[in-house]
Length: 179
Image: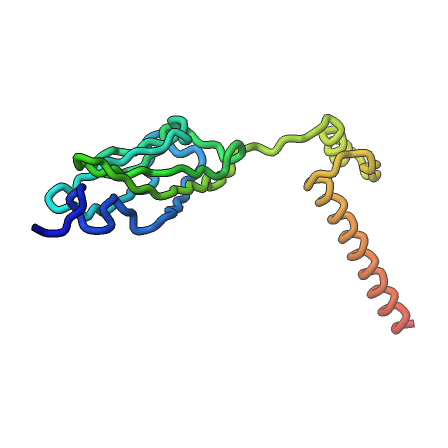
């Protein structure tokens, strides 16, 4: 008789994944049912190497796995602005008399999609933009909240001023040389 363990396999007697951690990227707003990845575990059992896959309870129904194939799918639409990383365990159980199991960690990174429209954070920003279009005077922006839009406006005005200054000096230089 061969020296098999009580579960019928040689070491490792439990189902084993090739890696301990698997990582996958999934674009946010992917349709429910979208595939993420497929995990396979190996079992050293002779004649009974059947494996059933399951997910730990931490996934709360967000992901599912096909018990036979190990295919992992998303069950709901993910929003990166709410959660950008999910981590959970996949469990592989053999179908022997004395069931043994192995596990691996899955990390799902939710890839950002440009799905949020820019929003003004106050009515004063809208009023500033309207006044810029209607007047040639420079409005006071010191009391407005700092936003990329305001920062870009200030930077552009500074660059414009520096360009005018440079042109003025170039003009003065050529004028002085001619006279």
